[in-house]
Length: 420
Image (cartoon, rainbow, N blue to C red; front, side):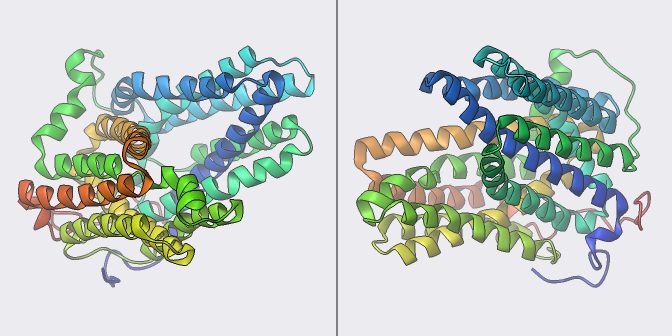
């Protein structure tokens, strides 16, 4: 990894449309994280039933899986900026209704779950369009930096947002929802202001072939297939963080304060590496860099599995998330750059299904292995499995292993990019 003096040099924030995109994504991410905390607390306060907390996850999971591929088709057939705008406006209206009903004390669990379902449907339909916009906002040489900056902002929201939502909840859930509504309004304003040149192709019906075209495209592109499948299997095997409460109590013999430190260590590692990547350009050996990062993820998982000291476990988790951030930025950028613009929505939709499913199944797999073998062997199996997958994928996808640059094509003139 080297800094570049050519197309990748300079600040990301000289591109006004990227600034608007970054502010929009940051605002909506903070709002959604605050919303999630308030909804869970409010529903449990109303009913006292753990089942209702599970239903919150269900009404978010079902749209994410069932509507992802149609959402990808929509992203490639319609103006993406308008799709994102309508999605966020729908979410904002649902949040406004939730805030108003809460302030009037006229909510119940069915109303809340129904509004969260509407928000989840809108988010699912919006997501592929939002993800597909980024490559048009910065030059290709700066896409990895833009991806890192965007990912870092979302990780910051995931860390700070729940704490801020919990703090505001002291004044009541209505205050949290009202604040969330303001953040979404900021996001809507930013999306409406950014310049995005996208001429949708002639519209075609949503047939089985067109909706599943993203799957066919990925299967026929070895580098894209290798990147997405590597992510799927690495995440499936690397779910050790789901076992943190067991490690804190039974392995490291620490209390809630130690668990808090363990949960914070990966976030710090990811944020610092993400910030560093947002100021550097990936120029050479990107394939081997990605494989090395995923292998580092596996090694860090093994160190965490066998560590008996809190400081060493924290260091392993710091390294684990830092390696994951490197591989995530390379994977995300490579998929975007290797996918034609007219296919980005459908490919992003398939990728999101893999990511969402592997994250949840990875935690389930870790929990099941821990129940059968114990926490330490379960984490160790995950680390060893990740290293085996890396070795196999390096053999199965030699082109990806030899990949030098994120963008394989000749230098592209920086046109249609709105600068300050």
